[in-house]
Image (tube, rainbow, N blue to C red; front, side, top):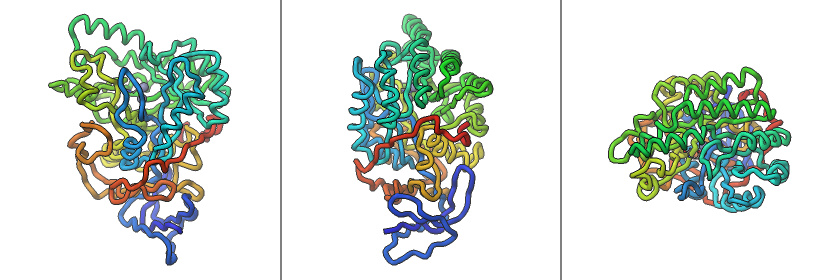
Length: 467
Ligand code: URP
Ligand code: ZN
Ligand code: ZN
């Protein structure tokens, strides 16, 4: 059976035009001014709607053990939320156990991923340097299609690696076509600032921001970029939150480093003042790097427009308020770090970006789909609307206004970061490889239908959109 989508407006990273789409066996097989459907065809009328490529969220922490607890969404609830929010592919982080090989760890994560509703891949986190890690990198890339790793410069004792280890790992990664993602914050300095703050009795959530000032992020970003340059490696700075860190990326790019930046919806629209909300409400907004002073947001938006920021990732790292965030009621350092975002990223970026005139609709597609697909080895199968691509599509009605609320969310949470925000536009249908997984805004796809994403090496990145 064929699916025909009629009368919609197709949007890619470069074009906006009216056309019909033909979908067969999960892929787009033709695009034309008008198709006359045959008797058995499944016809979808997209009049008045945009047809966008499905979002690709390359920064998720589903089913993720962290800081003495674990994230509240697993691969079922997390990918239902993703689908409702227009995301059709994710790349989730693994989290290795001490002494475990990367390959053994990956098998455990692939098993967890089997319940996913949308297509899924993994970035391997390396939190412990050993010689076997270097030997495993080419196997990860070639046999497993895992062509990205992640290193942390903070969370000492749990995830942090040192500069020397970073250099050795990045060098090998560069040689074998793996891109290295970096959490760039100066972990040692932060630990000292936290200790000082607690010693003075400063325990409220706002002190999470004060003990992780922008210099701790920009210094680490500059250092990561210098190490990548020395190692001749592709480097992807995750969750850039402030102007100073972004400037470091800009300078590195200018001197020829293969450097790429991601930011997240919460850094674009929320600010440090949320951490000071009374009655421990601020705890909901604790993530790292922390929310920043508002003036940074203009710099991040301009970075998206100019191409300095290549992708938007949700950094979906959800913890329930009751019982998880409240672990740190008397001590901000015990609040699990992370904010939800997978379900609302698409809407928030459209509303504050496109609707409010900060970015074009094509740029929206570029950072939500085409850019991540190119950087993380999924292009030209995912990331655009063209013949031969997977039919991962979002139908979006820009005329509908709706309120974001925890009452209607799929995220397994007792709060929503954007509660009460009224946004322009609504996702009406989502197709994943041609199959409707969201209809009239309701998730109808089955858990376990997602496929594992075997990804290409970084050397194959086309130097268009993301460079
Ligand atoms: O606060 C955050 N971002 N938590 C998730 C772990 C990470 O740093 O990405
Ligand atoms: Zn991080
Ligand atoms: Zn993260």
